[in-house]
Length: 100
Image (cartoon, rainbow, N blue to C red; front, side, top):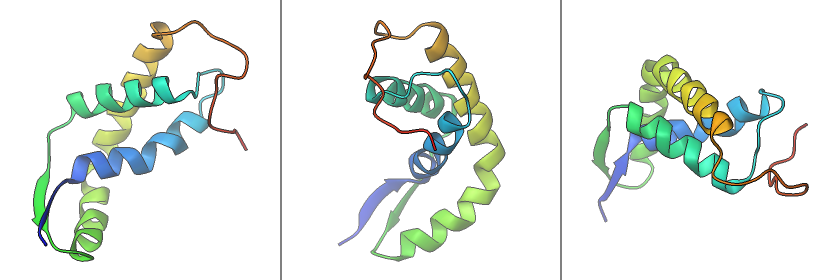
């Protein structure tokens, strides 16, 4: 069955954890992750496609390289914004992603 997918959302999801984990001192809780993702996606153009099954995987890989720089800039800008104005108070144990 055909499925509507936003490439840009997939690319942002792929890059989000990697970028956030590379920035020491930022909150990694789910609220902050979703806020960063929402802000980044609002800065980027939507890239919707209708696809069937595995076809989306190949297309996402092609689109990824094309949009990667734009996505990274949007994620970094969103991280800076969320870090400056988080929607919660920092609490010990709030982080849900482990730094390696």
